[in-house]
Length: 126
Image (cartoon, rainbow, N blue to C red; front, side, top):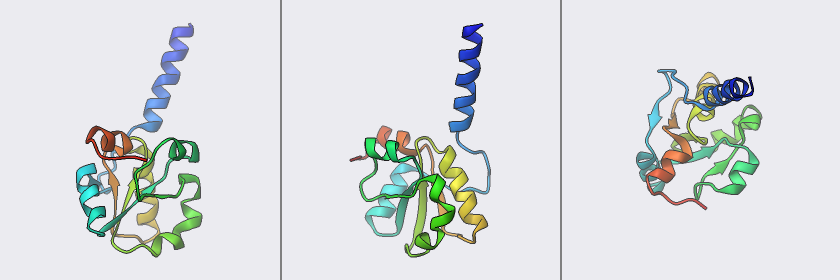
């Protein structure tokens, strides 16, 4: 019974953290994101929690936790170029893209695979 409960809870966690499959969300690879940011064409917005951010994050990324996203839309309007939303693996950031699109943002994408993919691409974190 315990094994079944653990399996169920693990399944729920994986579903909650998995990438959104909404086809209207533009995906940007970590390598593409790094190039866009390096050339000042984009800003990475990290929507993870404060504890996740404090553990490690992409240098130069802006931290706006998912829980604060709607209340900080005006702040996001001040950034020029593309906004690349990023979380741990892409699920929350895909939802963040959808929120921004509903609010009228058009030049926004999801970092495919999130911070995990960024690190797998051997890109630096702080």
